[in-house]
Length: 178
Image 1 (cartoon, rainbow, N blue to C red):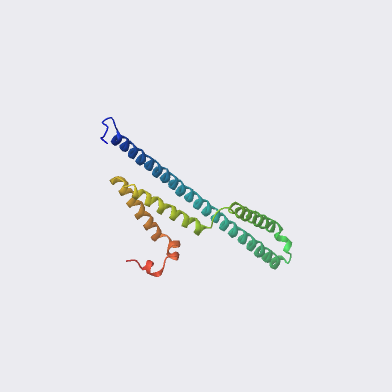
Image 2: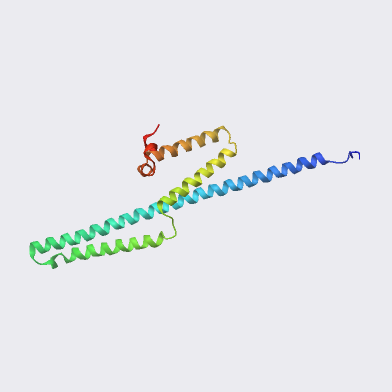
């Protein structure tokens, strides 16, 4: 059977290949956007966990200090005057501080129920960042973006080296360096 000159199969094949590559680019872009959003969500979650942990530690410190102050003040008032009732106002102030700090700690506990632990949030962020970096590299970025990726990786490596928490999670051979 002879080929019909009105047949535009090469053009249709080319159009189909263009459509496939356009859909692949769109899918890759959507995946890239979703991964970027995952990194942003992980960063926000980590920041919230850190903020709640700081509030928890501050509440614990204030509660212990107020309890210690009340006990010491009552003891000093008892030793000096023989009457522990002389430090009633101080006991009331320390008691109210203790109550407020305990309430803050309970509030932090309930606020952080849906959040992962600090270590898990950090691991999720690292995982999401690595996934994003792999996607950026697979896209064959241009030179300025390659430089940006390199700087980002070097910055994160330096931050990991400078953070005392990262030293605890690394093995002794990793701490020794090259």
